Image (cartoon, one colour):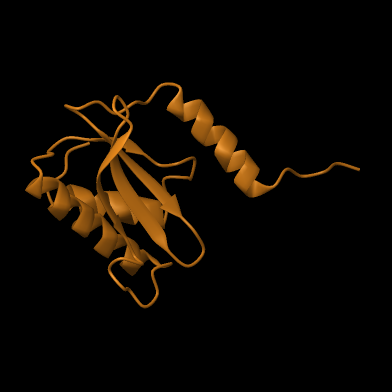
Amino acid sequence: MIKKEASNVARQRRHARVRKNISGTNEIPRLNVFRSNKEIFAQIINDETGTTLVSSSSVELKIKNGGNIEGAKLVGADIAKKANKVKIKKVIFDRGGYLYHGRVAALAEAARTAGLEF
């Protein structure tokens, strides 16, 4: 009998594989995305110092249903607005091992339209 690996374990392996090559710097930090079934989180990270520069989430914005595409769009626009306040224009997008589809893509497109470059 073939045992299927848990989907979150597979996601963590994909994320570790991507993180070997992606690293945020002071000039171009990393925009990381984490999604759960109910919420979505985004943060801009400087990996050289190990600090989070800006963060946003559906919990912080008090979105009633943060686990859908509309909630992801609001979080993407909010993270871009906060990034502009601290003069961050360009980031590296880290999709966190998730497919670039649905909520992750909606967050990225909303951040792009609000002014972030990646």
